[in-house]
Image (cartoon, rainbow, N blue to C red; front, side, top):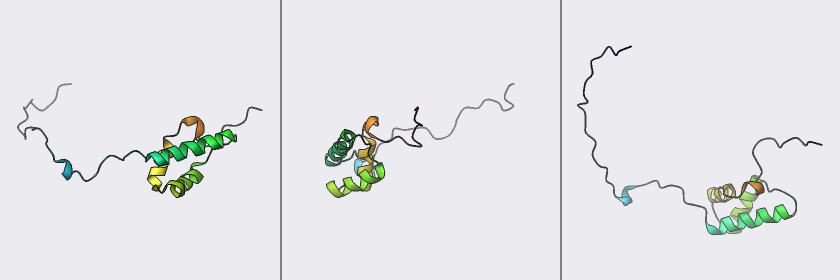
Length: 98
């Protein structure tokens, strides 16, 4: 079906190149967690895995904050960066097959 309106060319504002000063940017992308937090989180996850456990995020984040002096967001980012095999998956754990 054809459009009821006749074809018109755009007569609005034209696009121009955007320029900005880096000092004018108020919000930046989140920085990666500090190396101390990442190292602590990895070491703790490896220690728990050696004991046959998987650390809980709710326990590891405050402990990381106390040990390294990082913020909660930095500790959460360090936990999120851990490999999947040393993190608990979200949701209910799978039922045992036995």
